[in-house]
Amino acid sequence: MIRLVCVAVGYIFGLFQTSYLYGRMKGMDIREHGSGNAGATNALRTLGWKAGAITFLGDCFKCVFAVLLVRFLFDRLYPGENIGVLLGMYAALGVILGHNFPCYLKFHGGKGISATAGLFLSLDPLLTLGALILFAGSVGLTRYVSLGSILVSIWLPVGVVLYGVTGRWGLAQGHLYEMYAIAVFLCAMALFRHRKNIHGLLTGTERKLGEKAE
Image (cartoon, rainbow, N blue to C red):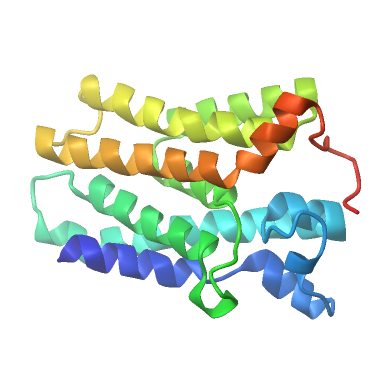
């Protein structure tokens, strides 16, 4: 039951659609421009660097705040256990679901990468550093933001499992399997949301960083 509550709390946080709200203040629906995605990259391409940065920070920290809230609410119920990290994963799952499928926008949201960055921040600094290196390195070399996003998505289950098998999470085996399942699900959902980008990368039609949206 507590796990469902954590997902629900996260979903409510995820409904804060930064790029959509920013676009509305500018008199537009960002989902009707560029890629049609309510995320940081489309905000960057359609509204500029300021909008992209604000969108990234808003979507990132809504995940951080959701994780912190559920850990504050429920950590005390499990004294002597580190189950807070697992409950944080459930909250992050809810945030990303709310971001990708906001009920009040007919379930048409973003792809969840900025929110996933917030999950990394709430999990571990080394995992966050790995994600940052993968993203910055790949985008710096290729100028494909989508490639960086895909690599970060894959790094999530890899990093979570590596920490699990080395005992870094301090969780019982059953709880570790839950961590793994959530991480794999989030990765699979991100890859599915990026399916058009993957096709563009394979065919050479993907837009690079700095190219304006049409």
